Length: 145
Image (tube, rainbow, N blue to C red; front, side, top):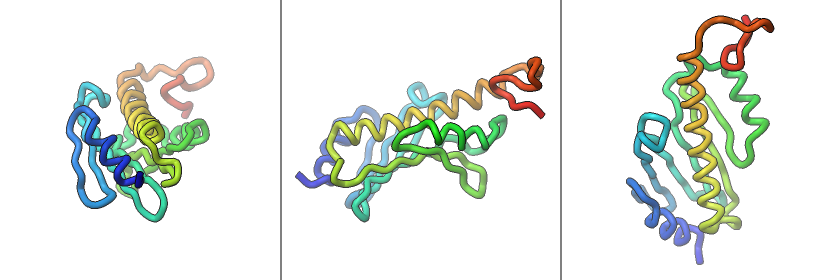
């Protein structure tokens, strides 16, 4: 079965709002209660032998240390955090077309969604944290300086 057909069937079976945008392109919207407080739009595109997945996580990294996202990238598999010139935070992931099956598509989407929710929750916690540094000059949510 072709990867595009596998993805069509998989995405059609997902709960919530899904849509086919074009041949080899889909959109998925997660409801706010399952996405860290506001809707999460995830895009999928099958092109040039790769399944690309991306989700817009934050409009602004306010309250986050952007270097922390680079550190998080060293701990992730298949997905990574990125920022636009407008300072929006996105989560991206790729899967070779030869590896596309329902299980691997679900894994990729799960990791992208998990990353977006994690950075949203981290930002909320950082913004709610008291501004009192610990003895090392920072806290687990706020770097020293």
